[in-house]
Image (cartoon, rainbow, N blue to C red; front, top):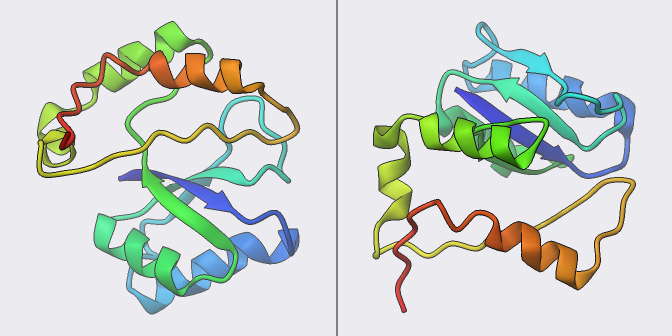
Length: 137
C-alpha cells in the first residue's frame, strides 16, 4: 500500500533511516519503497512510501520521532482534475470503511514553501466535495 509520509521538517538526514529502522523492527522492511511526489525537492516533508500494511504504517508513525503522520494514498495528480480522477478510481472497497456516518473526518490544507490564504484553503477543501463522506451531523 502506498502512504504519504509527512515528516517534521528537522533532522533531514535521519528521516528515512529512522522509518527504515522502524519498518525493520515491525517486519515491513522487505517491501519498503520510497518515492518523492512529482516536482518535490528531497528536503520536502512529503514522501511516498510503500509498506505492506496499514498496521505497519500505523506502528511506524506512532513510534517515530520525525514522522508527523502517515496517510493512505488515495490518489495523486499534476492538476485537480488528475487528482479527482485518481481518487475516484481508487478501489471503493478500500474507501468504504472511512466514508460511513459513524466516522468523522477533517480535511487540512498544508503546504511546504508556499502560503495559501484562508480563501484559497477553503476552495481546495471544497474541491473535494465529490468524496461521499457521510460524517455525523
